[in-house]
Image 1 (cartoon, helix red, strand yellow):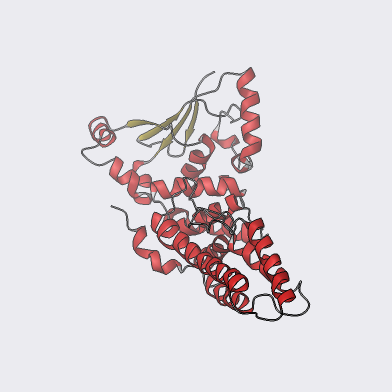
Image 2: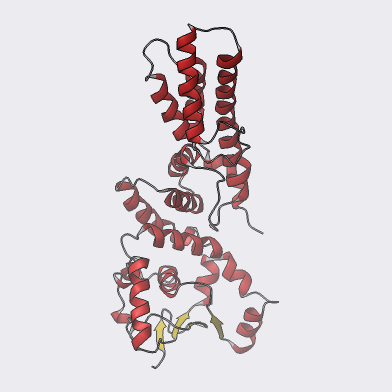
Length: 331
């Protein structure tokens, strides 16, 4: 099958070469549309697999302007400088071919369309996975300002749906709000992750700084969950060995309920070491509020309920995006 050539700049001096491009791409740039570039990746993936069985995948060539690219992207500016292979070839020959191997074809194609002002090719919204993949691509090329307006539209379209995020999607949304500096969204999703994450918090290979994940979120989560668990173990010790709190029967019932629930949550014996406990703060919170209302004579553990309320209020602050402004400074 002949190569597909898309000329975003007919006089461009850079040609990107993508092998094994999707077979459904039209041969003429004029026939390309936003719908093709907005397909959910899962559907596209299936389609690509079916196409690969029956046709030879084409090679996609994208002709672009180095001036456009260098103005929009510090990464491209470094690539086309003296001292780099691409920059040396561009200056000596007046043109350079750059193979693209690490990015999905449709993602890179969409980025090139945005950087060259091809607004008619820009979808009005993207699914969560595609939006995350675009955020990773934009972060690599550092072209934040060039795509800011488009990404604002995409993010706002997703926010209007008021999505309920799974654990994986929460980290994807954190990546999106970090890359595009969405202060309110960043704060809200950090609250979500702090309260709902189980065990170790990981970035799932997304470009989120370690300082945010390990130095801040993990430490905050471990500290407060550890504080609650410590109070629970203190309460067990007092009910087992301390002076009678209510009456013997009441104390025994409370001890039994408390020990059983701690065993169910995996925090009874041995005392879990952070961050290995598999229960989330939300699970602790809900379990013990439920437990406290299940006993008719005495509130089961007023001290623990008190600290749960305090910790919940503290976690509701989340993280402030402005606190990490220096992490956006790249060499």
